[in-house]
Length: 456
Image 1 (cartoon, rainbow, N blue to C red):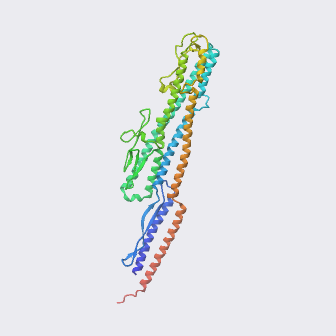
Image 2 (tube, rainbow, N blue to C red):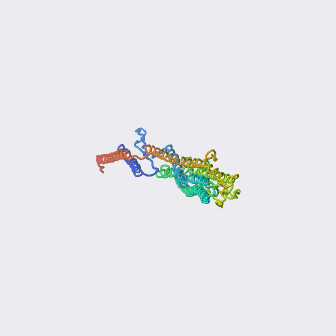
């Protein structure tokens, strides 16, 4: 009877263990498509059997084992961060490219050519009031083309500010989610075995990686501490939100104590937005302003060398702007009258010498060794190259992220085929144990029936 009882107890325990294994498998199948979920496996531990020491043997349920690989998770987060940066940059710089379209009939290069052509035509009839007015009209079109280009860059910069303004609260929201999950880890030590909690945490971390660069330190309680550079964003059950400061021309990101941490944020969408706002777009604007100021200064300087239709030195230049740092946006034509255009050389009143000299400025290497149209072409080419590189990076980084995700899925994800095979195996074992229990029960009853009744 003792052996039968032991066998019955062992079989009943095994039935409970394999029931737990069935639950784990069914949970895997149910969550196969849940973001952040990885395969779980119920481990089985064989108990020793020793008749002398009366250890009954059997099996017990060990800890649930997760297939999670932190190395693979980090690889996916790294690629997601790089892709977030590339996508943001490609999207924003794509808005700048039309501003510098080399084929547009209203581009700066087209207007520069038209402007210098107007002086060439004026040199044919230097005293024709219509040709003189054409010069002023062409000058106005050049100024407008510079104004529009500057406005285009400023609009993209404003869009970047708006996106940064919206992104920072999204980052802080994910930090709050991570903090809340950390609080659950701290409240219950067994939560480290919670597959659902684990999936939520890694899904939140992957989401955060598309937005900003960060590093992780996992505590022995299962909590995830998040840092960017040396700045804490989440430590245990406390989050430290960031904020965006737009009070100066350059965007500043501040930590929870108000410190400037902009230089630490180099990845993800936020890193791209900061790079565009603080470096890329200002560089484009600097080149544009320099070109506008140099153009206006050279034209005004050459005009000052001649005399107007009345044989007098010009009383004003053709162009005006406030200062070099905003020349493109403030470039304008002065109140100059047609008869004040200094088409003649100082020694030849009524002639066309200065008009010819002004027309020849078109081919003069006055902008760092380049002509005005060449300098504009260089700026346009740089924008085009930056856009093309950003788009290529986006394509390449998307492929790399896909590869990283596939590798993770292959090694840690739920395979429905594998789970189906395990399910069949466990069900068969479960059924076999059930039959064993039934057989042992029948044997026990038969043994009991063999015992003769007690007579008085």
